[in-house]
Image 1 (tube, one colour):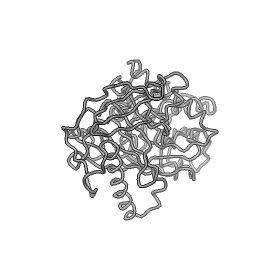
Image 2 (cartoon, one colour):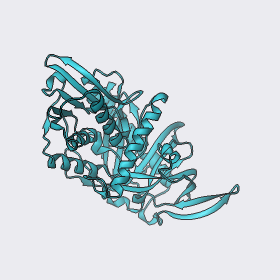
Image 3 (cartoon, one colour):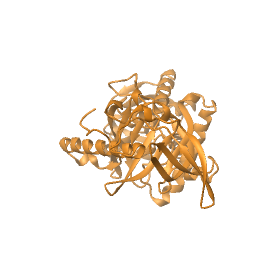
Image 4 (spheres, one colour):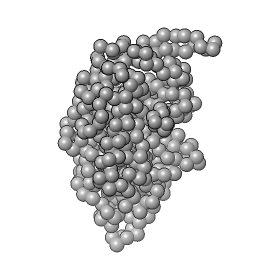
Length: 403
């Protein structure tokens, strides 16, 4: 068994070239995060609101006990909410304007305080509509705050006929992040995103291939990853994409909502009859299963490990998203340089040094609380083991119990 100390850390992202079968391949020397019992800050559970087949970005008329309402749906984005954010909201607003023309004097109710709901409220207000408020049953313990922040179309279950539409939404969103990066977005500052490398195995769909095909990011490079101490991974590729600092993004979206004097109200909407307004932007995420009676909504459980300051800093300038095999099964790992995490218990945020993840477990809501606890313990252990194996060549040096 290997023992890991901070003394093993190498200089990050040092490139050496070699010739393999007549083709130049870069050896990329990377600083791995220190992974042991003392560097694990927190274990985090997260449930992604995935809609099977396609997102629900649509309009409909609701005829209920309180009259007829125009409903604009924008939910079901799975683990790609931030990657599809501006494209999804833009499409929803365009559908609303084309299919539900109403006077701008009519007020609009937004349901959901995740990134979709906040952005929809902001963009509607900026376009001259009156948003009476945002209804939400939870402010902080939601996916938008917990998301790791990799710009890529991953963790979605989209039908082949929907892929082109998904790519268009992703491209539209990517262009907004580029505006943010250039300091040209009106309410989000440039430090909320970083344009950095992501390394993926060649058999992993990185989720940025369409961006490369459209010339929005540079062509990928074939690389060998070298983490030192004899740990190397061949047959990898390097892409460039955005790391989205979801904590900064959510804080700035929240600040803009407050600046625009849009009330955020704690309430659970069980039916569109619960809403007085004649226009509803429905960005309810998982709530769509009940509110829309949507059988295609699938809660997907995910597990994250936050690392603390003792994990080092050299790994905070790159991302990993790759397929691996563990006990004969295909699994995933990812590492993204998230630096602060927010929850209902820590609303100002707790400082961290990267997020580790890579679990996608559908229909976990069918399990009992006891079964969920058992599942979580197993998945956290597997997650720590395969990340430790990937970065250091050995399983995590301690059995997971609780963090």
